[in-house]
Image (tube, rainbow, N blue to C red; front, top):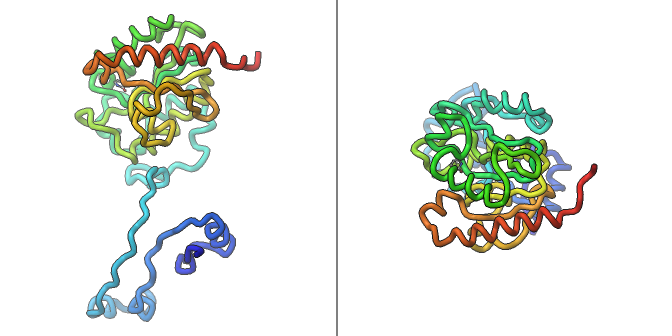
Length: 277
Ligand code: URA
């Protein structure tokens, strides 16, 4: 049966037909019999205040998993194209002044990313912690030291260039309070920055570290253990999934698996089709 969209006044006939074709259900409050009979707003409030008619149960609300269109009370909603055309200086400035979610209120610094912007490796982590917030650079704490060692093991570093370098960025550019997990709205608001960084770096391989990086890039809720060992894609770029260095510090027995993941990343890079000269 086709979804009934006739009660959503904002949709025109073409939009209704498209939604029906796609089988998409939309939700809007159905006018109650009382509301339908009520006089136009501004004439009287009597019907609302005196009505004793039972309120019909609301249909369940289908919540979007990615709240990209939820407007933040802190800033006007972004327009499409706001971020995906920025060059590096403009992108850096946009991150530094961002107020799209509540994390801006508690940050000391935004954490944009570090490394060669032409590196063929890109590392994507989760969010800044306390040290990163203080220094404005990703992965500078204990997990960062492990990440540096992992990069060194594959002949790379955050200070290196090109085939010896790596660009390191996080899904969130601001620290969540007390290092709590990122919230879906924070991820949704911040994701365009990461997407633009990927588009500008044009890495040959992305190593996604930890659950939030993986979920954000691959739009999946599958656990890392089930995603490892395969080559995924983000906007056409190969993505290798591995454990977060902070997890590896707590679970050193899994370091061997992380090493295998880095080897897969190197192999993927070596066998990648050569890009334009
Ligand atoms: N963990 C991350 O995911 N990113 C950082 O920058 C630091 C710790």
